Image (cartoon, rainbow, N blue to C red):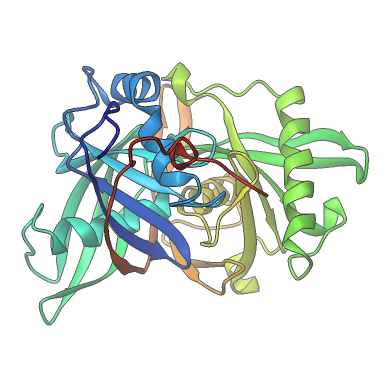
Amino acid sequence: MHTALSWPEVLDVVDMHTGGEPVRIVRKLEGLAEGGDILAKRRHFAERHDDVRRLLMYEPRGHADMYGAVLVAPSLPGADLAVLFIHNEGYSTMCGHAVIALGRYAVDYGLVPASGPLTRVGIECPCGLVEAWVEIQDGRSGRVFFDSVPAFALALDVAVTLPEAGALTVDVGYGGAFYALAPAVALGVSLDGPVAALKAAAGRLSEAVRQTLPIRHPLHEDLGFLYGSILSDGRERAADGASSNVCVFADAEVDRSPTGSGVTARMAVRYARGRVALGERCVFRSLTGAEFSAEVRREVDLAGLPAVVVRVGGQAHYSGEARFWLEEGDEIGRGFLLR
Protein backbone atom coordinates (compact mmCIF):
# COMPACT_ATOMS: atom_id res chain seq x y z
CA MET A 1 0.00 0.00 0.00
CA HIS A 2 1.21 3.49 -0.87
CA THR A 3 0.13 6.71 0.80
CA ALA A 4 -1.78 9.03 -1.56
CA LEU A 5 -0.04 12.42 -1.65
CA SER A 6 0.06 15.19 -4.25
CA TRP A 7 1.79 13.09 -6.88
CA PRO A 8 1.34 9.76 -8.66
CA GLU A 9 1.76 6.56 -6.68
CA VAL A 10 5.24 5.90 -8.10
CA LEU A 11 7.94 8.46 -8.95
CA ASP A 12 10.06 7.57 -11.97
CA VAL A 13 13.61 8.97 -12.11
CA VAL A 14 16.81 8.74 -14.12
CA ASP A 15 19.96 9.43 -12.13
CA MET A 16 23.00 11.08 -13.71
CA HIS A 17 26.01 13.02 -12.50
CA THR A 18 28.13 15.77 -13.99
CA GLY A 19 31.63 15.80 -12.57
CA GLY A 20 30.33 13.94 -9.54
CA GLU A 21 27.42 16.32 -8.88
CA PRO A 22 24.15 14.34 -8.90
CA VAL A 23 21.20 15.09 -11.16
CA ARG A 24 18.04 13.16 -10.35
CA ILE A 25 15.77 13.69 -13.37
CA VAL A 26 12.12 13.34 -12.31
CA ARG A 27 9.90 12.19 -15.16
CA LYS A 28 6.18 12.00 -15.91
CA LEU A 29 5.12 14.90 -13.66
CA GLU A 30 4.56 17.44 -16.44
CA GLY A 31 0.90 17.91 -15.46
CA LEU A 32 1.62 18.78 -11.82
CA ALA A 33 3.16 22.22 -12.38
CA GLU A 34 0.49 24.72 -13.43
CA GLY A 35 1.01 28.26 -14.66
CA GLY A 36 1.39 30.43 -17.71
CA ASP A 37 5.18 30.56 -17.56
CA ILE A 38 8.04 28.69 -15.91
CA LEU A 39 8.23 30.97 -12.87
CA ALA A 40 4.51 30.53 -12.22
CA LYS A 41 4.95 26.78 -12.53
CA ARG A 42 7.82 26.91 -10.06
CA ARG A 43 5.69 28.81 -7.54
CA HIS A 44 2.78 26.41 -8.00
CA PHE A 45 4.97 23.33 -7.61
CA ALA A 46 6.65 24.74 -4.50
CA GLU A 47 3.29 25.56 -2.91
CA ARG A 48 1.40 22.39 -3.85
CA HIS A 49 3.96 19.63 -4.44
CA ASP A 50 6.98 20.34 -2.27
CA ASP A 51 6.54 16.84 -0.81
CA VAL A 52 8.00 15.54 -4.08
CA ARG A 53 11.17 17.55 -3.52
CA ARG A 54 11.49 16.37 0.08
CA LEU A 55 10.88 12.74 -0.83
CA LEU A 56 13.52 12.65 -3.58
CA MET A 57 16.16 15.04 -2.22
CA TYR A 58 16.12 14.13 1.48
CA GLU A 59 17.11 10.93 3.21
CA PRO A 60 16.46 8.00 2.99
CA ARG A 61 16.34 8.34 -0.83
CA GLY A 62 18.71 11.28 -1.13
CA HIS A 63 21.07 13.28 1.08
CA ALA A 64 21.94 16.85 2.06
CA ASP A 65 23.87 17.44 -1.20
CA MET A 66 21.36 15.80 -3.55
CA TYR A 67 20.16 17.70 -6.60
CA GLY A 68 17.21 17.17 -8.92
CA ALA A 69 15.49 18.30 -12.09
CA VAL A 70 11.71 17.97 -12.42
CA LEU A 71 10.54 17.92 -16.03
CA VAL A 72 7.50 20.12 -16.67
CA ALA A 73 5.62 21.25 -19.78
CA PRO A 74 7.52 23.89 -21.80
CA SER A 75 5.91 27.24 -22.59
CA LEU A 76 8.59 29.14 -24.53
CA PRO A 77 9.06 28.93 -28.31
CA GLY A 78 12.15 26.89 -29.09
CA ALA A 79 11.97 24.87 -25.86
CA ASP A 80 12.07 21.09 -26.24
CA LEU A 81 11.62 20.57 -22.50
CA ALA A 82 11.25 22.63 -19.35
CA VAL A 83 12.66 21.98 -15.92
CA LEU A 84 12.38 22.95 -12.27
CA PHE A 85 15.63 22.58 -10.35
CA ILE A 86 15.33 21.24 -6.78
CA HIS A 87 17.76 20.85 -3.88
CA ASN A 88 17.97 20.67 -0.10
CA GLU A 89 16.55 24.16 0.48
CA GLY A 90 14.11 24.67 -2.36
CA TYR A 91 14.23 25.65 -6.02
CA SER A 92 17.08 27.03 -8.16
CA THR A 93 16.76 29.48 -11.03
CA MET A 94 19.53 27.90 -13.13
CA CYS A 95 21.79 24.87 -13.00
CA GLY A 96 24.51 24.32 -15.58
CA HIS A 97 25.56 20.85 -14.47
CA ALA A 98 21.92 19.73 -14.74
CA VAL A 99 21.55 21.32 -18.18
CA ILE A 100 24.60 19.37 -19.36
CA ALA A 101 22.99 16.13 -18.10
CA LEU A 102 19.57 17.04 -19.53
CA GLY A 103 21.08 17.61 -22.97
CA ARG A 104 22.25 14.00 -23.11
CA TYR A 105 19.02 12.75 -21.56
CA ALA A 106 16.86 14.58 -24.12
CA VAL A 107 18.70 12.95 -27.01
CA ASP A 108 19.11 9.48 -25.50
CA TYR A 109 15.49 9.21 -24.32
CA GLY A 110 14.00 10.44 -27.59
CA LEU A 111 12.77 13.90 -26.57
CA VAL A 112 14.93 15.35 -29.34
CA PRO A 113 16.11 13.31 -32.35
CA ALA A 114 19.87 13.17 -32.83
CA SER A 115 20.95 15.06 -35.95
CA GLY A 116 24.48 15.69 -37.15
CA PRO A 117 27.58 16.06 -35.03
CA LEU A 118 25.84 18.66 -32.82
CA THR A 119 22.19 18.32 -31.80
CA ARG A 120 20.40 21.35 -30.39
CA VAL A 121 18.23 20.94 -27.29
CA GLY A 122 16.21 23.92 -26.06
CA ILE A 123 15.81 23.80 -22.29
CA GLU A 124 13.41 26.20 -20.59
CA CYS A 125 14.84 27.04 -17.17
CA PRO A 126 13.39 29.42 -14.56
CA CYS A 127 15.98 32.00 -15.66
CA GLY A 128 14.98 31.68 -19.33
CA LEU A 129 15.65 29.61 -22.44
CA VAL A 130 19.04 27.89 -22.48
CA GLU A 131 20.32 26.30 -25.69
CA ALA A 132 22.32 23.10 -25.23
CA TRP A 133 24.39 21.45 -27.94
CA VAL A 134 25.01 17.72 -27.65
CA GLU A 135 27.97 16.14 -29.41
CA ILE A 136 27.00 12.97 -31.30
CA GLN A 137 29.80 10.53 -32.15
CA ASP A 138 29.20 7.09 -33.63
CA GLY A 139 25.51 7.42 -32.77
CA ARG A 140 26.17 8.14 -29.08
CA SER A 141 25.73 11.34 -27.12
CA GLY A 142 28.79 12.78 -25.42
CA ARG A 143 30.00 16.16 -24.28
CA VAL A 144 27.42 18.94 -23.98
CA PHE A 145 27.77 22.70 -24.38
CA PHE A 146 25.19 25.31 -23.44
CA ASP A 147 24.78 28.99 -24.18
CA SER A 148 23.80 30.89 -21.06
CA VAL A 149 21.08 33.44 -20.55
CA PRO A 150 22.51 37.00 -20.45
CA ALA A 151 25.12 37.07 -17.68
CA PHE A 152 26.59 40.13 -16.02
CA ALA A 153 28.66 41.54 -13.18
CA LEU A 154 26.18 42.95 -10.68
CA ALA A 155 28.82 44.61 -8.48
CA LEU A 156 32.62 44.66 -8.28
CA ASP A 157 34.74 45.19 -5.17
CA VAL A 158 31.90 45.00 -2.69
CA ALA A 159 33.31 45.74 0.77
CA VAL A 160 32.25 43.28 3.47
CA THR A 161 33.57 42.37 6.90
CA LEU A 162 33.66 38.84 8.25
CA PRO A 163 34.46 38.13 11.92
CA GLU A 164 37.07 35.49 11.06
CA ALA A 165 38.56 37.11 7.93
CA GLY A 166 38.17 40.83 8.60
CA ALA A 167 37.55 43.35 5.83
CA LEU A 168 37.69 42.16 2.22
CA THR A 169 36.20 42.93 -1.17
CA VAL A 170 34.18 40.52 -3.27
CA ASP A 171 32.50 40.51 -6.67
CA VAL A 172 28.91 39.50 -7.35
CA GLY A 173 28.07 38.00 -10.72
CA TYR A 174 24.98 36.58 -12.39
CA GLY A 175 25.03 33.50 -14.60
CA GLY A 176 21.40 32.45 -14.31
CA ALA A 177 21.77 32.76 -10.53
CA PHE A 178 23.67 35.28 -8.39
CA TYR A 179 26.95 34.35 -6.70
CA ALA A 180 29.46 36.09 -4.46
CA LEU A 181 32.97 35.47 -5.78
CA ALA A 182 36.19 35.59 -3.77
CA PRO A 183 39.56 33.82 -3.50
CA ALA A 184 39.53 31.19 -0.76
CA VAL A 185 42.72 32.61 0.75
CA ALA A 186 40.95 35.93 1.41
CA LEU A 187 38.65 34.06 3.78
CA GLY A 188 41.49 32.24 5.48
CA VAL A 189 40.76 28.83 3.96
CA SER A 190 42.29 26.60 1.30
CA LEU A 191 40.66 24.59 -1.47
CA ASP A 192 42.93 21.75 -0.34
CA GLY A 193 41.59 21.97 3.20
CA PRO A 194 38.58 20.38 4.90
CA VAL A 195 35.29 20.75 3.06
CA ALA A 196 33.63 21.70 6.36
CA ALA A 197 35.87 24.77 6.59
CA LEU A 198 35.04 25.77 3.02
CA LYS A 199 31.32 25.40 3.70
CA ALA A 200 31.52 27.53 6.82
CA ALA A 201 33.58 30.27 5.13
CA ALA A 202 31.32 30.39 2.08
CA GLY A 203 28.25 30.53 4.30
CA ARG A 204 29.67 33.50 6.21
CA LEU A 205 30.47 35.25 2.94
CA SER A 206 26.99 34.72 1.55
CA GLU A 207 25.40 36.09 4.70
CA ALA A 208 27.67 39.16 4.71
CA VAL A 209 26.87 39.95 1.07
CA ARG A 210 23.13 39.51 1.65
CA GLN A 211 23.32 42.05 4.47
CA THR A 212 25.39 44.48 2.40
CA LEU A 213 24.16 44.42 -1.19
CA PRO A 214 20.59 44.45 -2.55
CA ILE A 215 20.31 41.65 -5.12
CA ARG A 216 17.99 42.49 -8.00
CA HIS A 217 17.55 41.11 -11.48
CA PRO A 218 16.64 43.78 -14.07
CA LEU A 219 13.70 41.80 -15.47
CA HIS A 220 12.32 39.31 -12.92
CA GLU A 221 11.85 39.81 -9.20
CA ASP A 222 11.81 36.03 -8.65
CA LEU A 223 15.43 35.82 -9.82
CA GLY A 224 16.71 38.46 -7.41
CA PHE A 225 18.45 36.60 -4.60
CA LEU A 226 21.98 35.49 -3.77
CA TYR A 227 22.14 31.75 -4.41
CA GLY A 228 25.55 31.10 -2.89
CA SER A 229 29.26 31.83 -2.86
CA ILE A 230 32.14 30.58 -4.97
CA LEU A 231 35.62 30.38 -3.48
CA SER A 232 38.43 30.16 -6.01
CA ASP A 233 42.18 29.71 -6.19
CA GLY A 234 42.49 33.33 -7.34
CA ARG A 235 43.42 32.55 -10.94
CA GLU A 236 41.39 34.90 -13.13
CA ARG A 237 43.07 34.83 -16.55
CA ALA A 238 43.10 32.08 -19.15
CA ALA A 239 46.89 32.30 -19.29
CA ASP A 240 47.03 31.29 -15.63
CA GLY A 241 45.68 27.84 -16.52
CA ALA A 242 42.69 25.97 -15.13
CA SER A 243 41.15 27.74 -12.14
CA SER A 244 39.88 25.62 -9.28
CA ASN A 245 36.82 26.63 -7.29
CA VAL A 246 34.13 25.33 -4.98
CA CYS A 247 30.54 26.53 -4.92
CA VAL A 248 28.47 26.40 -1.74
CA PHE A 249 24.80 27.14 -2.40
CA ALA A 250 21.30 26.73 -0.97
CA ASP A 251 21.52 25.36 2.61
CA ALA A 252 25.29 24.75 2.74
CA GLU A 253 25.13 22.40 -0.26
CA VAL A 254 28.51 21.74 -1.89
CA ASP A 255 28.65 21.41 -5.68
CA ARG A 256 30.88 18.55 -6.83
CA SER A 257 31.07 20.04 -10.34
CA PRO A 258 32.74 23.35 -11.28
CA THR A 259 29.17 24.81 -11.27
CA GLY A 260 27.86 25.78 -14.71
CA SER A 261 25.97 28.90 -13.67
CA GLY A 262 28.85 29.82 -11.36
CA VAL A 263 31.39 29.45 -14.17
CA THR A 264 29.11 31.67 -16.25
CA ALA A 265 29.07 34.29 -13.49
CA ARG A 266 32.86 34.11 -13.14
CA MET A 267 33.26 34.63 -16.88
CA ALA A 268 30.91 37.64 -16.82
CA VAL A 269 32.98 39.20 -14.05
CA ARG A 270 36.25 38.40 -15.85
CA TYR A 271 34.89 40.07 -18.98
CA ALA A 272 33.70 43.12 -17.05
CA ARG A 273 37.22 43.49 -15.63
CA GLY A 274 38.87 43.06 -19.04
CA ARG A 275 40.54 39.80 -18.02
CA VAL A 276 39.15 37.68 -20.86
CA ALA A 277 38.51 38.40 -24.53
CA LEU A 278 35.62 37.33 -26.71
CA GLY A 279 36.09 33.70 -27.73
CA GLU A 280 38.97 33.10 -25.30
CA ARG A 281 38.70 29.61 -23.81
CA CYS A 282 38.97 29.22 -20.05
CA VAL A 283 38.95 26.07 -17.92
CA PHE A 284 37.48 25.66 -14.45
CA ARG A 285 38.08 22.70 -12.12
CA SER A 286 36.07 21.41 -9.15
CA LEU A 287 37.14 19.60 -5.98
CA THR A 288 36.54 16.26 -7.74
CA GLY A 289 38.91 17.21 -10.56
CA ALA A 290 36.07 17.62 -13.06
CA GLU A 291 36.55 20.39 -15.61
CA PHE A 292 34.22 22.73 -17.48
CA SER A 293 35.31 24.87 -20.42
CA ALA A 294 33.90 28.35 -20.92
CA GLU A 295 34.12 31.25 -23.36
CA VAL A 296 32.30 34.53 -23.82
CA ARG A 297 30.43 34.21 -27.10
CA ARG A 298 29.00 37.70 -27.54
CA GLU A 299 27.90 40.89 -25.84
CA VAL A 300 24.18 41.54 -25.34
CA ASP A 301 21.97 44.20 -23.81
CA LEU A 302 19.81 43.22 -20.85
CA ALA A 303 17.30 45.99 -20.11
CA GLY A 304 20.02 48.56 -20.64
CA LEU A 305 22.61 46.58 -18.69
CA PRO A 306 25.75 45.33 -20.48
CA ALA A 307 25.76 41.54 -20.42
CA VAL A 308 27.33 38.57 -22.19
CA VAL A 309 26.36 35.13 -23.41
CA VAL A 310 28.76 32.46 -22.14
CA ARG A 311 29.18 28.98 -23.63
CA VAL A 312 29.99 26.31 -21.02
CA GLY A 313 30.96 22.72 -21.81
CA GLY A 314 31.15 19.58 -19.72
CA GLN A 315 30.44 15.85 -19.57
CA ALA A 316 27.62 14.05 -17.75
CA HIS A 317 27.24 10.32 -17.11
CA TYR A 318 24.36 8.00 -16.26
CA SER A 319 24.12 6.35 -12.85
CA GLY A 320 20.88 4.39 -13.21
CA GLU A 321 17.09 4.44 -13.16
CA ALA A 322 14.78 4.05 -10.19
CA ARG A 323 11.15 4.03 -9.05
CA PHE A 324 10.35 5.54 -5.67
CA TRP A 325 7.22 5.49 -3.51
CA LEU A 326 6.05 6.12 0.04
CA GLU A 327 4.66 3.16 1.91
CA GLU A 328 1.55 3.76 3.99
CA GLY A 329 2.40 4.70 7.55
CA ASP A 330 6.02 5.61 6.78
CA GLU A 331 6.24 9.13 8.22
CA ILE A 332 10.06 9.04 8.40
CA GLY A 333 10.13 8.13 4.73
CA ARG A 334 8.59 11.49 3.80
CA GLY A 335 12.13 12.86 4.11
CA PHE A 336 14.64 14.05 6.69
CA LEU A 337 18.23 15.29 6.85
CA LEU A 338 21.00 14.43 9.30
CA ARG A 339 24.33 16.27 9.19
